[in-house]
Length: 253
Image (cartoon, rainbow, N blue to C red; front, side):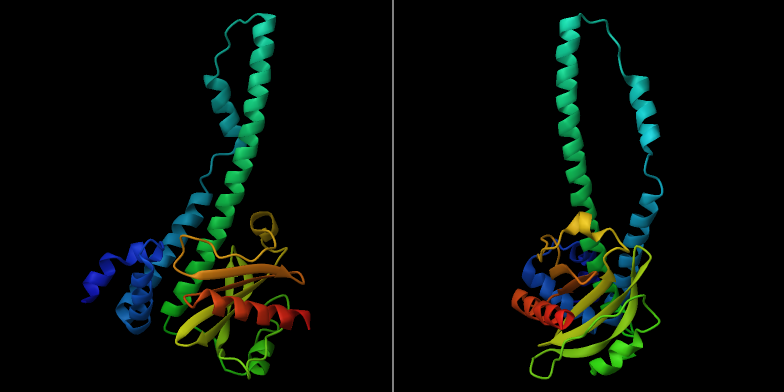
């Protein structure tokens, strides 16, 4: 299939809306095609720029309140009807606040998942996905010292099927973190590590591991020792879970 045919579906691929088989075909093609990889990187960067710009133009609470006050009608009501209206309005307000809180939490969670997936795709599409290229954890871990404001442990891989490719410093919401890349059976897996308090992870994600839907990857995330971990890749759920458990064990040691 010519590259033009691939690029026609590139946006659908990045949005995670392709069938699973086509997603795996795309993963293989993007890793081997510099043109499509560069195009994917440009589109991911544009997507993130649009998301960032959108945050700057969100109406303030004061603006919303003034608009609501300007369009609110004020008909005369009897005492009884006014009491019923007040009770109904209070119920609606409570439901509205609950729904709004849930939507904000759900939206924030999905945005974090999307940004983590974007970082994974953009890094793999880059011509230099790692800044420190080494399979030795004793070389990669010290490299991060002084570059990020925390330390973390890397798991021992000698008896596993995983191999370490290297790492780089990454950013989520302008917060620095570590990005490690692992290989397993020709699949690339990204492991991201951030400080929990630096980004509002706890309110949006909770502390449970999960695999979000509508993404072309399997993902697990958890909080441990003041750090928030993300493991994401196109490998099977069993491989993602196994690498996640290895990081949990390393963090607890």
